[in-house]
Image (cartoon, rainbow, N blue to C red; front, side, top):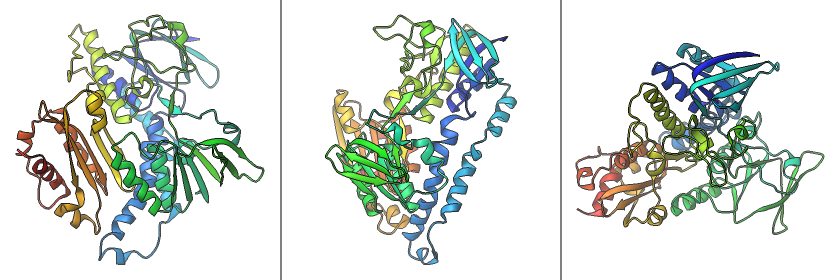
Length: 479
């Protein structure tokens, strides 16, 4: 067994772990990073990048077909093999050479293997060959191990070898029939992607499609999915699953109805990757989400003893926001905070402070790359009311802007602005429609900056663009 000492040890070399390690190194501290799979994590190989590559080609084709003069140039359908090859390229063909090279260039030592906390500021790494290395952290251990797809306890489900997001995104061929259990982001995006690639798709959306968003989002996305040939079963729930000898999957609903498929995707949520990282050695429960304070320090639940103050958790594993960009945001703040503490400087975790992750609660931007796209930031109307805010909701038909009619023939979309009436600032913004993703950052800035509506009148949108919706929403609100 070998032993090394660093200022900081990071368990998990996904984008979140990479970012905190980078900030620590830039601040002049030493850091080691531990990874048992591919450096770059879920986002690089099984989520953000390859999924968007799967979706982009069909989105571009739909955009061309919506424009007279351009649609006449289209002579065929998608080249499925070319789409999958492009997907493979964006997943770096599931090799992490480029990511490893970046770590080396940044001066961040990589320890390949399974990392387990073995006590105060100590992490043991077991390599593939069984060799063990003990890493001791002078200042902090950061858990950035992420999450995995949740497979529920449905009779026969695990034995039927269902796909999770990983198998779906890395599929080498398109199944003839795909059934999806779930109605959230992964379910909706993969239904969109595989329907466009030629699969017959059915969704078992027990709680509806994108039900955590504003109601009009799920309505429009469901309608578009059905128009694309997807069978959306709202309220449906799987009661039992079996795969027979020829590979056919049989899904029996709780109503008794049976659906057959060639593959079954389970996309109902995530579970933390904390089962075997040594949490029990610091009085925490293995397999649990890690609760953190405003400084990202791991804290105890009511029935657990207090965790030591050197242990931090960022990204999916702390369950604040399960989005890559928010995890990286947490990582930047935490890395700078660790450096500040090491230098004896003040750590500012007050709202919108340098080391705070305030946006996790007030201004989380998210895009769902369905057709149409959904883009939202901040609170829904229901969430704002539940938070006790006195709000006013302003809706506008995106198709009514000149820019939308130029963007695509028959453009359909919707925008909603949620205003805190006491402060006269926007606290929520949701868009659904073709290519609305690129409109989102303006709303994010308005919410984070708490820009008064009176000042927003002076942010004049260029004509003719879809961004003209900002002016129309303000006009609907009134001065």
